[in-house]
Length: 458
Image (cartoon, rainbow, N blue to C red; front, side, top):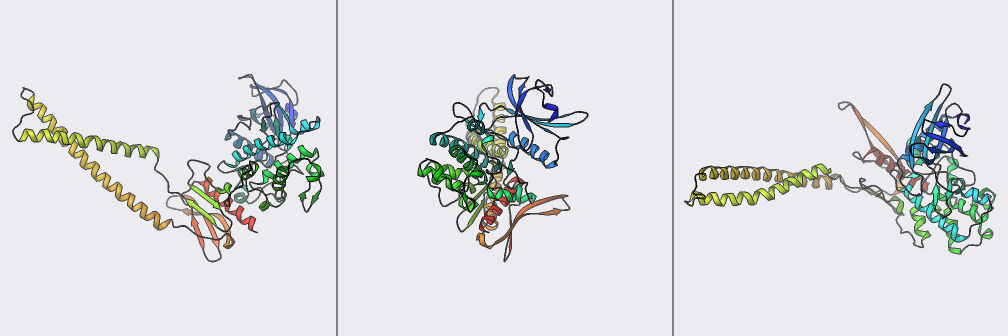
């Protein structure tokens, strides 16, 4: 990018360029100083004038949006996204925390030869980062795991950088396609078809680890039917070699399903028969649990809970009811004594106080009556909701082999002047529609996951 090649140039009156860090498929990254905080940052830039494909602008904006929602110690902190217009060009910028250290590619080029313990330590940290990305809503796929995008400090701490190829799990399903991105040799076979699943990043991680162990590019390693043959080139434990062999399997169904699954095996714990990355418990606000067993799919959409404000309202009514009931009983007792000839007070203010007691008693009785009616209606509504939930949310039992198509469908409501979408499963015999009241992101995630399961069966 011509406009930022010179050092000491100040961008947006805030960032002073120190030098070039690297260049990827989408944009050039520079080391800079934030003049507001006097901290070093990584400033990624993209020139609209020098960009030959509009797709790169889309990927750049998607990277900024993804980074703004991430919060993990192994991912440089997002700072800002902005654009600068000149008379000849428009430049887009992403400012991030500068990850201190060198990339794995630089270290190997400088002669570094890590042992098995060091490689395992790197693998463990990267698995934790990938597990975090896959726990997002929807799950995030990096799609460009390679030595150049992994920074390591002298103390062994690892950072994952360059999210220019990032993709959401439902992107391929919803948009109907995806751009082929990634580095040759580190790309999983399905990436050549423009597809990415959770285990795609595991393949990139595996080939990166093989690069560290063999000091050779993955494309130069011997293969048999797309399967990398590396055991004769490394001196590592059989357990670690078996684990590596599984995450670099060319077939998606033969790899670990997710980073969480791979992390369990890495620790020596075998994953259960249920695919753990399908357990959709990634957000406290989510109501979906999707379990992918070997022969059946189980989808459970939990009933929506009451908002916190309504809960506080009900708790206030319940507390008021408990307070007013004993007060009204006490006042009623004393008023009863007054009526049978036992005066409460013998002073000049006795009549006024007695009238005040009676007014409080009447108000208490009225409040208790109102609360009692409200409680009865609330109990009736709860009973009706439970009956409706049992009648209309019966579990649907479908074998994955019978599913022909899963997609998002929509209907237009002319009276409301709006459209609503829902999930639709099409089988040979009938259609199943569900998820009408789910948030749009959860609908898209669910459709993407179901299509992912179907693709593995074909």
